[in-house]
Length: 435
Image (cartoon, rainbow, N blue to C red; front, side, top):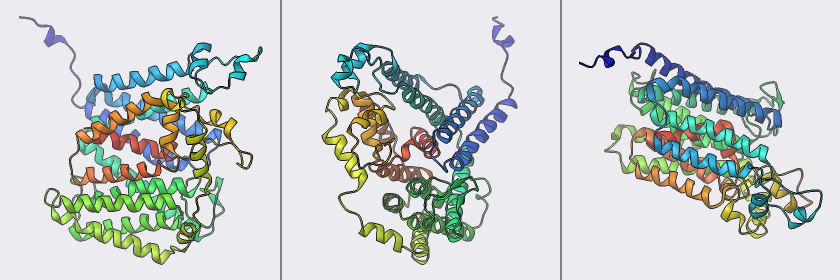
């Protein structure tokens, strides 16, 4: 008899759940900590938040590896393909720079200057790749994490979203001068929580709004599953009303539109599949939506209405898009200019009346296409197709689909997909939807 199998060490059945719980705790910590670091977008705060995200995600992945395993071959192929693309972007090669880089020919004709990288900013490319590795790890955790542990992440997300909404509303009511006593508030006339501006704040809340309403009706959520139905209805309505009031009161046109779009989509999916997800969980969302709009009207929709009325076709972000679509070379959208290279590539096209440097395109979709080209588009479509292939409706997944739809709308006119506090939630959403 072969006795090797008897002598091999076996995992401790007690240690494995402890490490999985520790991994979930680290992930919940990231969900809570990163929004509190978004008060000012400076090189120091952006570097610090990226460092926290990368370190925390790797710790969470390492703790979960013994129980949930490493990513499967399909995931590893995707990560390898993305990493190979970035490697080409930063590889020191004048030939690659001349063929694909966003440089004028005069740069190569100058005797003392020859671009040596495909990406005009290799440092930004490597930072973006570091963010990708962290988000890849978080997405895998969402894919592989057990349902019971995943419920803790939803609690952390909803708790932070409620904190952001309440803090934003109270800070504006008190005319606070700083964010958490650290950073100066950008606008004292609108709530924006601990985020640097109201647009990023509203986009974050739009992502979490459907989950804040539906978490009360998801099975086996710790602390909520044994509550009587009356309290669940109350909690659902209060969460929806508070977050809705903060979104609409922020005066963010795109954020408010994304939040309303997410809730309407959730209503359609809940109503269409009420038999599948139990009719008792359908009508509270109607109450929550009504409460959100009622509280927003009480709080004051005038600032948002004024901004909507002032909207013209001369918005700066529309001008950015016009330059990208009409003045950028078409070949850039085919082969890309290098991940993270948008800021450097846009400078020759930046007009004199733009104040400061434009670090993001205010259109995440266009920026992704111009930086990664056709390979990036294929990767994005691949993930979208996989999510559609695994489409099914539960209370939990309806909230995820709605939040993801909200941020997809935001991607057409802002840069929230580049904000760490939003990135980790999106990555976790996508990982769960790929199950």
